[in-house]
Amino acid sequence: MNKNLAKIAAIIISSALLTSCAINTEAKISNQIKQESSKIQNTSSNIAEDTKDKHENSSVKPNEAGKIMILMYHDIGPKEGEWVRTPENFKKDLETLYKKGYRLISIKDYINGDINIPKGTSPVVITFDDGTLGQFNMIKTNEGYTVDPNCAVGILEDFYKNHPDFGMKATFYVYYPVPFRQKDLIDLKFKHLIENGMDIGNHAYNHENLRNLSLEDIQKALGKNVYETKKHIQDYEVDSLALPYGIKPKLQNLKQYVIKGEYLNIKYENKAVLLVGSNPAYPIYSIKTKVDAIPRIRASEMNTYGTGLYDWLEYFDKHPEERYISDGNMNTISVPINKEKDINRDKVNGKEIIVIK
Image 1 (cartoon, rainbow, N blue to C red):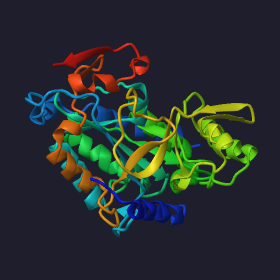
Image 2: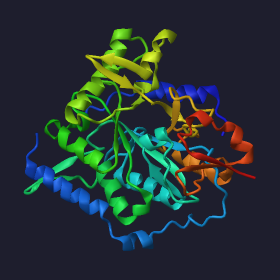
Image 3: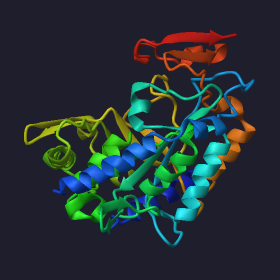
Image 4: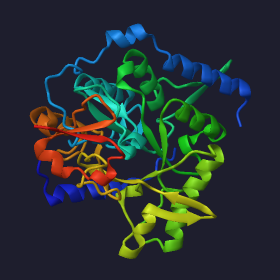
């Protein structure tokens, strides 16, 4: 899976040229969304039994020091593009991941090392950048608003109904002033995401390129995003950042403010800073993990230069020993004896380390 520098440069340049997707409700509406959320969460136990994970009794030994795919999506739309997946192709991605034994965790799960998936399966994180309408659209009906079945949230919810053991987690990195492009529905959408186990992350206030910004402007771009999010969901902790264009500040002494800073008396702290493309990540407790530079994989089939989702799926099929394999117990970390040295014991959050000989 070696990649030459020209290919990596091509990905970064392509990302840097990407333009931002230009894309209080009544109690009655809120109650309707609550009811729909309840239906999703209370999926029949019969379905869960029918879709019981075939990997649970896998003979593959656990490897919780293995690599984890953090997928990067942008828009969901009618025409496939380098930064757009059609609803049909997004559904294909979910089905492929499910069949290959991957199960969803959130970026907060990743940050905390709380990977609660069945034995023999592998975690995967789905992230969306920009907060586009294609990611989360609501349609007005006679009764109020309902989730568009062809937007990312609608597709995830529908897939969860039929495959509840897959999970229904994703992280949306939004920018302002109008995340998800429906101004009057921001409160409703944020609340819906949180109530259904999904996350909201920082993508700077207006998708600012941080490269040449001053100290004050860096803190304004990142802090104002948190400030605005807290206006909609007051007690919510925004604790991760997807770098706009994948670019950090140029000056070394300013890079620390990507992690921590303050704006208008609002403090922000990013426990994970996500890059653009093109590799899987290691667990948060790995000595190889740099929390200010966590890689992602482009969930695309166009111009991926051998480092897209399906390239890595094929790679892990050929090299399963490199893939994170769960032991089925979120309170333990099971690793092969040759991987024990890769665990940073200061970051295991009280979990027991089990060494497999």
